[in-house]
Length: 363
Image 1: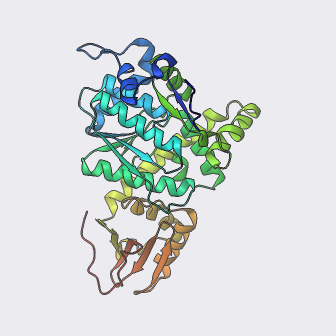
Image 2: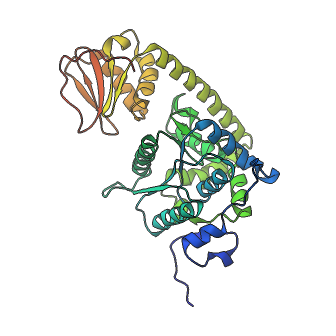
Image 3: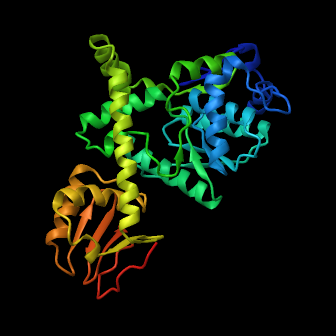
């Protein structure tokens, strides 16, 4: 029988197992029981042990599973080593074509075979075809899925993803907060940040993990792909120690970021609501522009807003010089308003003209 050409590849260890429905393929790749004590095979410990530790400490979790190799390996590992039921698996169709749709179908089928709840969503019509827009839509979905279940999001990011992220942040002139890369708290659990991508690939191959290989991962139209395929290999050929050096920078930046976040949480009261955040103007009155550029990103993160350098600079300047009744717009669809007593951040479409608002209460 003639095979239908696909614009993507569905990978499985034993291609004889690629026949049948997605659910049938998933059942054939279901992980073997490891015994009542949940013992981890020595050959798999490098991949499964971090998952067992991180998810065991995280409580209720939602796995972010794209259908690609690394996230499908995470799903397999989690089902194999975590005793408590997963709150859900969440998978997002970016609407980029057949591969994205096939990935969602595969994730759904594997979840049915594992008897794990699966929630899906698709990028809204009109979403710009950019990495930033897809990331924003995906994370809105993931955070909402976790919030509805009182859970934390778990991702399959690896050491290699962290290294690529650090390169990208450097290219974008990130400060210390940005140079933490993926090693940030924010309610997201990343058990594999110290695990090499090659170890995850080996684990997936050993256990016949089915996944969809999206051809867009090889497209140099996207910055992360150019970094992964071209820039990072060239840098490592020129300086083999660079990976370890950059990861050390990331660890130092992550430590600094956590200390700053602890200080801001202890020192400043803010009101976080469904539509934004407010903080008393008096809380920020004694800071200069440099300090405000450190404090505002921590506050903005409480409403899920990541400030870029330009946004930090504009917000710091507005804090020092803005007058009651004034307003500025930030990227990400956020309006910042100054009232008599407060600074108020709201997403566009939710902003209201400020009046004589009362100071915000404690969190």
